[in-house]
Length: 307
Image 1 (cartoon, one colour):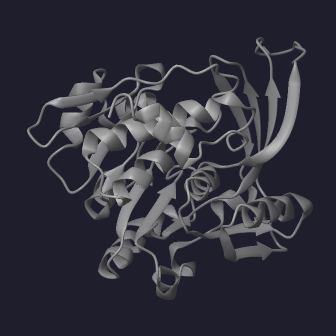
Image 2: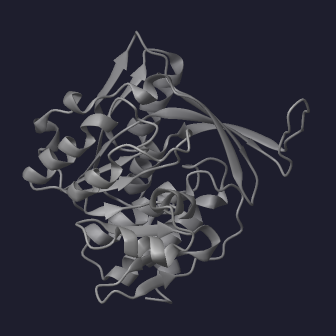
C-alpha cells in the first residue's frame, strides 16, 4: 500500500462510558473506563495502519508519561514515530471523553496539541509518502497559520492531501479554512461542521457551496452514512452499516482512514464511501477510538455485499 504521512496532534483519551451525562453540580456513575490513544490525527493514523498502510507521523508531545504512552502505542501499531518530538517544556494534551452508545461529550486540555508549527515539518518528511493527512484544523493553533503552505509544499512534492476540520470549540468557524482548501484534495467535515462552516442547514446545499474548487468534500453524517457530490453534480449518499455500537469516539477518524485506504487504492468513488462507512461503523464496537478499528478483511466483508 502507498505510504501516508499524518501531521497533527497526539494525546491520550480517558474514556468514561455510561448512559448518563453529567450536569453542573451533579455526579453520575459510569459503567466502564479505559485509557486509550486519542486525538483525531493519531486515531486516523492508527486506522490506516490497521488497514495495512505504511504510516509516518509528525507531531509533538510532552516529555511525560502521557506522551510516552502515546508514542509507544503508535510504535507498536507499526507507525513510524521518529518525527514525533518529545518537548520537555510542554505537557501532553489530554481528552476526557464521556460517551454512550448514542453520543459523546469531550473535555480537552490542549497542551502540546496546539504546539506544532508547519515550519517544523521539513520537506524531507514527504520522502516516500504518497499522501498527507491533517486533522483538527481548529484545535491546532500553532499549525493552522501555516497549514495552507504545508499542503502546497506537499503537493509540490507529488503528494495528494486531505483535511478533517474537527470541531471549533470557540464556535466561530473562522480562519483561512476556505483558502486552505485550495491546496486540499479531500475534505472530511461531519454534519455539524459542514453546516457551521457553510452557514447552511441542508447538507446538499452545504456540499454545493463547497463544490467547484479543488477539494472533494465528503460529509460524515453519523447514522445517516456519508455523502459527497458526484462528478455530474448529484448528491451521492451511502448509508451507514449496522453494528452493535459501544462507543462512537473516533468513528469519524476511522471513517477517514477507510475512505483514504480505498481512495489511495484507486477504487471507485462509491466504494470509497462504503469503505469509510464500514470502517467508521466497525470502530464503534469497543471503547475508545482505536480498540476495535477494522482490519482490511473485516471492512471488505462488510462492503462486499453492497459493492
